[in-house]
Length: 161
Length: 200
Image 1 (cartoon, each protein chain N blue to C red):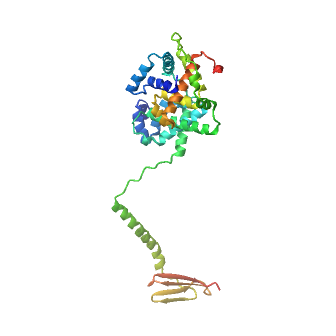
Image 2 (cartoon, one colour):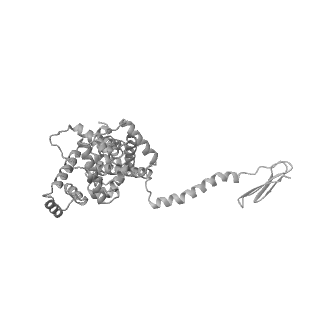
Image 3 (cartoon, rainbow over the protein chains, first blue to last red):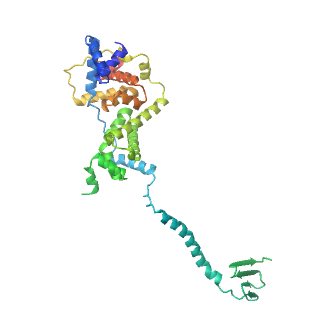
């Protein structure tokens, strides 16, 4: 029997031929003993397989099997943190502007006492002019500090010689 | 009743919805329900226990990762079965690349060994016990090449049509028909017990 006829016969059994092709093919095969025998064999095989898939139970314990899956999931999947709730845009703007302003204010509060601290009178030399102080912290004046309240500037000058 | 016990009676669809929300215990129940079928499908294609365990576990991991893509067009078990089938096919392709051309493949290409096989006449009086029949089927499947066994498994056990098998296996419908024909004829011989394997 030709291969294409055999394959068509199989397709007929599997319901893969169109209605017209089925009718035509059945007429052709009506008196073909070889085709009938092949049809019987293919049908028998198909019916034997149907609903008789061999059972192959899982060869490992169910909890071990699950642990392997769970570990792989936790290893490959990054932990998803719940998304932060979206803020309205004006709140975002407020935070954007307020944060630097707050930081600047905090810095100013920390520095203000330092800048406004009355200059200690040096042991050997101190000059105070209306708007600024110059003081020497050490004998023989190797360190000189200049502080101007007006300008808001403090300079420390260290003379290593 | 605890949440876990309540979930045990839930349908697959309900468990999938819970798992899609991130509930791992719901997913664990789905695994417990269908692990045997998924493993069995992997084994039927690969014929190797270790590989079947590994690939079936991988299928579950992929299912978890793609759970939000599951839209419910098919049942969950059909969906996860397709995942494991695709993984097995990838594995078989890798193995095929690594080995030389198989004898079965050469026979198939050489001009239709299946056409030279004598037709088996079914004996209606032979009523095989179900267990005996399954054992013969199992032995027969083990002797088929990967390509022939896969086509047979997809058609007879997964009830896939030629077109779907061709798409899944990335081959023509003609190839599917040819492989299925060979596989059936060989199985008829192997199951009938009328001929010894050495005579083929």
